[in-house]
Image 1 (cartoon, rainbow, N blue to C red):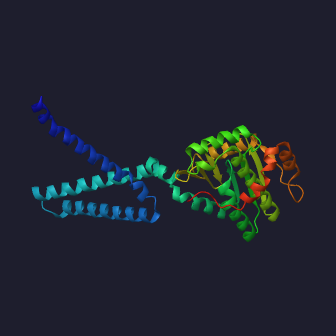
Image 2 (image 1 turned 90 degrees about the vertical axis):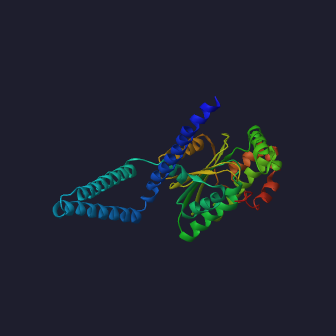
Image 3 (image 1 turned 135 degrees about the vertical axis):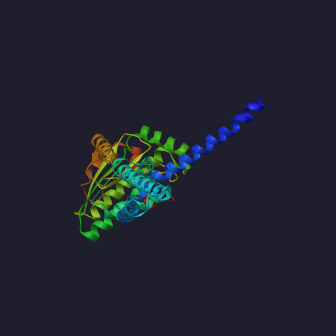
Length: 321
């Protein structure tokens, strides 16, 4: 048996070696899609390839016309012919792969953001967004970082920005409690979470949105919704780019540009959530919209959170990105 293993071992290692080499070559070939995606690199590659093929064809014709008919020159000519034929096949195959195939690794890489890149990407979207939509639970990062950017850009560019904000319905204490339990177990700041904390943070975001709408009247067209749909994902972005993030700053994000084939699906998902949610009208007196006043009076617990929520409006984003 030991002898049999020794006899089989060289074949086994040879197979493993060939498999590794094949895998390496495949990765190198597939990376051509990334290289040839650059117009300048594509021009350089095609120009050099065409030049080499022309030189090869010229060499074949020169040997056939002027070189003596000897075995040595025939062998040289055959070598040139094989090189040119292989080059034509490789060039045609490479262009075919480039234009008719998608590299899954390239697609995945373009759609994934590392945790440390999420904050900057959200800011970049906000700085260039003609509109903005967000489906989130409490909106702490949105009110502290993103909403001020949207307001600043609207003022600087004198351009009206349409914003749709969907938050967790703070009137549903059971949903707020369920979300708090999830965050307490899985989040980096789990000790802070309780149903009352969720309600306070949602209310703080609502008050911030109301204040931003009044301070930038005519520039920020904000619609506010309260949803009872609970999710571990956020959908956030503009009509040009959507980010799908999770609850913790150590999680990666999925990025979808308008050209991405999954972009319409997430826009549609946001629209469904928004259409099922309860809209809060932001028009009202100098203190609070009439409808929000009614909602608060219906819930004594939420009414008691007003002072804490006003203080929370001044807090920074909790995410260390």
